[in-house]
Length: 311
Image 1 (cartoon, helix red, strand yellow):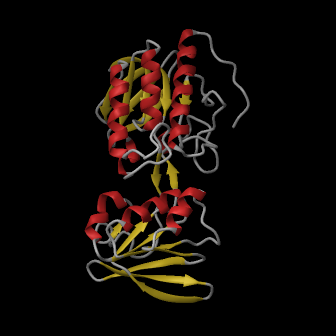
Image 2 (cartoon, one colour; image 1 turned 45 degrees about the vertical axis):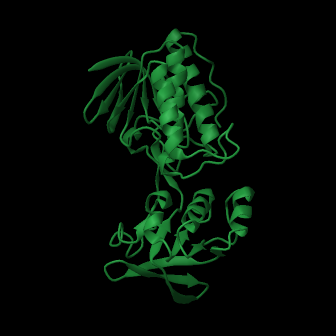
Image 3 (spheres, rainbow, N blue to C red; image 1 turned 90 degrees about the vertical axis):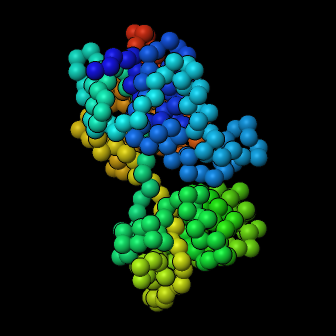
């Protein structure tokens, strides 16, 4: 069992920022993540809303840079799956599959997992035309027609990444309007390869060994749209299953926090899109991580920050 001051669950932007700040405050820090450094940001081809990079930065570049800063501050980053967090009298136990940490404070920055459509054909053709990562699989569809399911920022990022390879990209969104930020909608409008189809539900993924099309419903009518690939981007589900019964969660499974990132359990803090009311931007995740780290430091120092209203 390894003893640390602060155990951080998650090595994405929020977790690595928290590790860097906590380490800079003199805390002994360990970070556990099952995916490795950067988290899902590593799958983003170009991040355009990260401060200081007007031309954008690749997610595969940002993750390692944050990792370097965290380790330079003294944090230890370990590849492991966290199964449980337990509260004891004066400390916490973080149980990983390979490592067990005893910590005086814990920061939960485990992020989220991409939601699925839960329709026929989705699992059958996963890896055979069904994907959730355009930057990973986009080149496989060079010169072919593909579609994206979703209407938020992530879905439009996927469409733009796919447009670099595919002949045509069709975005299907069940809503009457896209939920993505205006800058992304403008980029999509300027991309001749991308078509937006609203008020349309993908009901089934069709194929014969590999994906050949999708069955759509718009209004009361159904039709088949031919496509070689289906990229699913319909939101995120917080990775909080291992925390149920320990922390107060909202109806969506997000961790409820105050403005200092404190949770319902003193000594446990949360950062990033795993918490309630997160705006789910990388810059805000970094801010959450820094705030959580400073709050954890004050908690360990005995000068606890007075909790404020819930956000």
